[in-house]
Length: 105
Image (cartoon, rainbow, N blue to C red):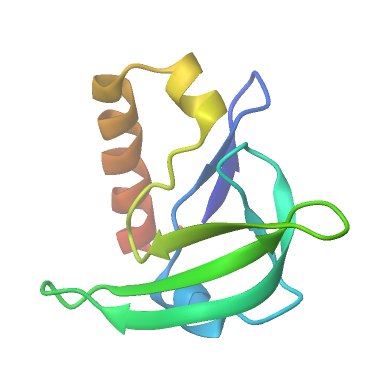
């Protein structure tokens, strides 16, 4: 689930299907708030609560990459989001997105 606020900040909360289907070449939100191409899928798993996660390397320039991980039903916090919102506001946003995800919106 990808949403954008009125200031252009992107919010990404991956669904189970999104986490399980991540592959090289896909676009994912980086920690800097930009969509970047997946260079390599590094690992996959399930946490103790049964939620799926995936770790990837994202392209970062011609010869570089940055690592990132995504978990089903968890808001991916970017640097721009951490500057724009307090942690309480981000938790509220996450709860709202999770509720919409569970309703299938």
